[in-house]
Length: 201
Image (cartoon, rainbow, N blue to C red):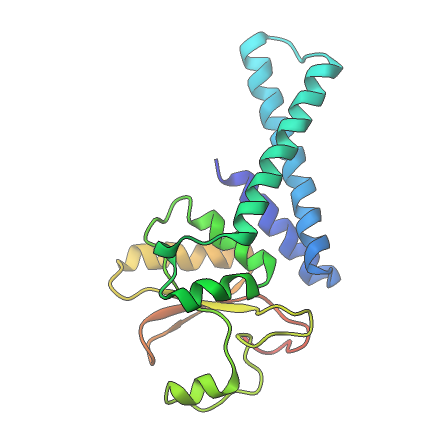
């Protein structure tokens, strides 16, 4: 069920990293690829049920349905995060500051990980001092030149190591950087490459 949307995210990350594509165009490219995959899905099911490929009219209906599914998925994933998946209301408000690819990666993992908890997203240099840490010059938790934050943190404390392992590899397979932190509370740091700070994670 989630394969087409994983395909969307992986395609968008490929466009982002290989061609430094603008966020909206990267998402659009991934969305088009996902629509093609969904049309293949729908055509397979249609053929299995009817034994026919179908007419041009039925193909148009499949394409329209694929478009509807992708638009609904992207619209929800880009704009909304449930209260139960955000550590605080402030963190929930930070959700839309994240790069669109990161937001869609979160909305996809929520389909199978109901205990997912976003603990941090956008930060300012002084936030590190408040946590008793040295301020950073190149954190991907800062807004980049494209206007988006390129990193977020996920709670791992109190979760099974198997779950944390699978969560880590989900983001790695998507093409993102992952780093387990235990200094300021056990959490998983996820980031998307920024061309403003290419060495930062």
